[in-house]
Image (cartoon, rainbow, N blue to C red):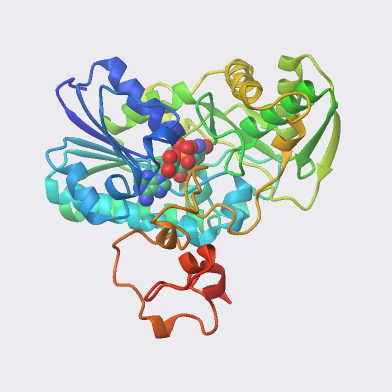
Length: 410
Ligand code: NAD
């Protein structure tokens, strides 16, 4: 990859996007635009030597005008922005997950319009047919197993649709799109609490909470037998780079093939912490499919490489980072507060933890609709007798505002 290329990374305030920006910086790429809807102070990693487009005005990639600005003069686009989280989030926020279709559509359109050379799209193992993931002792998923389509409801359907849109943009418009299906990525500088975190980070946090509080117990979602593979972040960014600059035209697995059960993942975290915890299984919690692993035959065939960081090694680094974050925020008396499960419906109306009821963008954020997208509904269309979202939050009505998300749903 040439160091003089101009590169755009969306979702750069998030976990993988932040690492990808750093990866390209380290390679010496000089022109990097990093975009995220979150304000800069909520990004996991901020680099002052790149051009940062942060917040709902400059960084919301659902907004076509923002996408155009980002793609203008760019050589490569890495489309990682998405409203997503672990199973608790995606099972309870399907509409929000599907709204990422706006981001993918507008970024693709803007990239094509600007004549961008390569477009990378971050898809997910959630596109795979649920029927093929009912058994914890699964055979690993091959790329062909995405069809016939029966993906994860909401989040997975959107990913499958956007994958196909990338394919048709390539076939019909000639833009070189590349698609990787990530299988659970973990590592430092990612979400570790608040409801959007994934299993490795959640388990590290729970083990750390037990250590810090001295209460040697842990709550596990499901019965712990569900199996997964987990890819360390360094492998993920390396894979993104390799796939984008390859001739791999079809969506391809990017994941580790080291399969473990959630119980085994807890064993690893306990071993790192040097404790043994009493396990409580929360059987009604979101748990996702019974088993999922990545079949890496194709990626090895194409690249002679596959993600190969051992889970124990990656978990050690992740645990250490979360430990520092945790102890900076909680102590023995407050550690129990970190274990509050926040996977209730609509509990995370905007990406990140920066939910700010005082924000002037509150009425659009609460509905998950981008600022400036389409026209506001006339006041008479608002649900009868309900206060508009912003006004309800502030206790006074505002002309022309849309109804609160929950009120409108009823
Ligand atoms: P993340 O939540 O840490 O990062 C995503 C970022 O996108 C967030 O910072 C969020 O603020 C931003 N974003 C959301 N909507 C946006 C918008 N409209 N405009 C601009 N930015 C917006 O998640 P991640 O783990 O870094 O995931 C990155 C990508 O990889 C996502 O597309 C995700 O679906 C995909 N993926 C991740 C995993 C995983 O295990 N982490 C697995 C499969 C697929």
